[in-house]
Length: 276
Image (cartoon, rainbow, N blue to C red; front, side, top):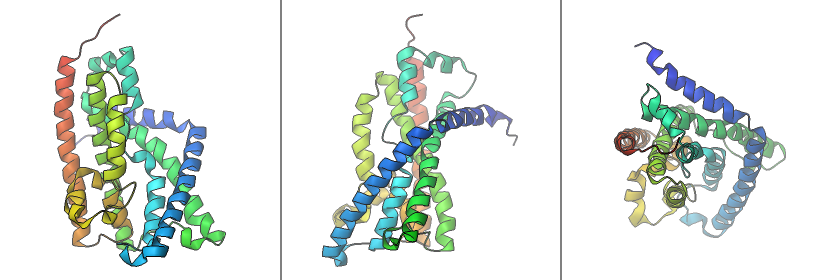
């Protein structure tokens, strides 16, 4: 299979990725904010473990690593639609996308991936430096971001990270389609943000929720964006459980991409361009 058919999509990804990397001050500001909130969340966890350590489903060290991972990869979480899509809808720029001899879903998906990764990777590298290297050096080892639990966990985290990114982009594409259909991103963002924060495990690891909710929480698609890959990282999910987690991420990614493609095709058929 030649790479030639993928070149326009890779070019769209690269162009968006390189453009977003230019916003270095925004990356530094985002990193500083996420570092601050990460410290606050860890202090909350430390207070909880100090009073109820026996009731906690994971160790404090794993909870701290969970927090740092979440703060490092916060920009990968699909809680707001791509703002460029909303801008294209309002200005009529979406008409150019209709004229391109490309698969519209694939083109938007590639651009969305570039947007997400360009925002997340610089902040993640800074977070590794701050929480994984500097904190131990200054004597705060118990608050540090720990490496993967084992070589196996590290190797399993690679496909888990790829799938969490693909799944997050699939969720975001659904939001983008809603924005294009409703002509405004505020409505979908107001619904998507709390759903992603709570159901992905970003606010709290899903194991902390009531036992009666566990089966549903671990099967719903947003678990694959945070909870599953992070628990693979510190080997709370290992062996067959890790394989099930990866399969769940891949399955939901395929399902949401399929739904997104159908929804986008329907939206594009009804799209009306006005003005000139």
